[in-house]
Amino acid sequence: MRNKVFIAVSFDGYIADEHGGIEWLTDLPNPSTGDGGFSKFMESVDALVMGRATFEKVLSFGIEWPYSKKVFVWTSALDRVPAPLEGRAEIVRGQVTQVLERVHALGFNNLYIDGGKTIQSFMRAGWIHEITVTVAPIVLGRGIPLFGDLPKTRMRLLGAETLDNGMVQLRYEISG
Image (tube, rainbow, N blue to C red; front, top):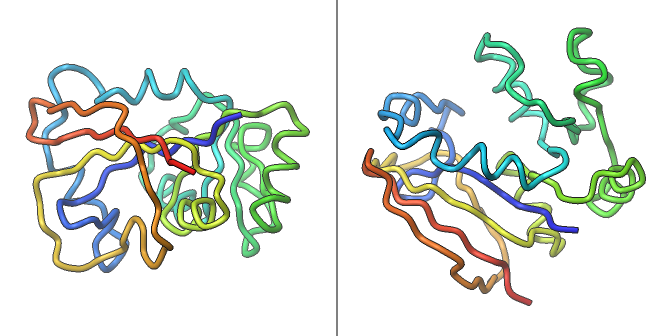
């Protein structure tokens, strides 16, 4: 069982601007070499666990639901997912270990963890095993940090790649 993160950050470590916007990221050109490894990453996971804010951000894009894998929305604020997503997305509640027990009991063991607070909570509990961070060539100055106030966490570099759009992708395994 492995829990993984795949996320983009500004050069100064923010996943969104101070208003939760990610336009700075969508304004950058996509790499001409594909999707920056996202499809390959998705092949390595069984399901996603994302926080409510990330879920609502994805819904706000006004596009077809982008995930073919089951999505678990970790929230205490929502009671249900929109009707068109029933069966594809499901609400989960509780502490990190309770969420993992529920998701694992359903047969999903290799999880994509997404959303700033969700990633931080899973890291704080020691349940992130691998993280891929794509660093965008932009300084936001302020915003929503990827890591926030986490304890010291050691990582081992698994790989680094320079994308042709100026981004750098770093893949780490969380140590100890």
